[in-house]
Image 1 (cartoon, rainbow, N blue to C red):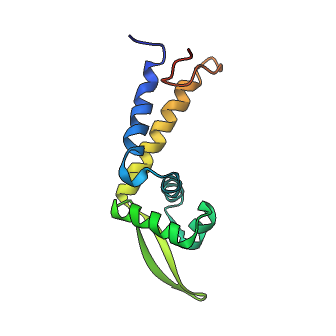
Image 2: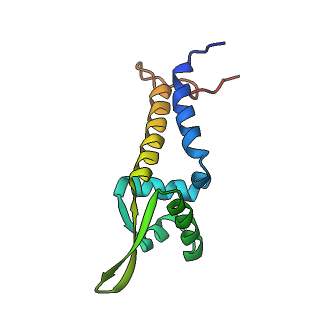
Image 3: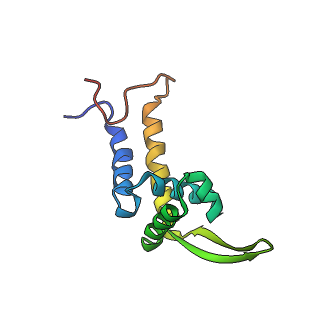
Length: 126
């Protein structure tokens, strides 16, 4: 049976497809992907501060994302010593774009042209 919110289903499907990927089954990894999608590259220390995780935990999350092909890490040398730079890959940008597109569709479905907010996209009210 069709509902008035069927146009929102593609946004939910897109999000589901992205978030059900093994590498993105962690809110920390999704946060890292979004941060790199926006910034293209960040220092390990910046990601450490952003995620609030330990060095070991962040390293694990970066390994998972790197194995999936979403980012790569490289050592850069600065006046303060060597630093790890994390950069998003083309595949990572594709995943970020899909995630952003899915969220955009949900926002658009949630906010009808009249300015009133409807029920949550794709979810029943009852």
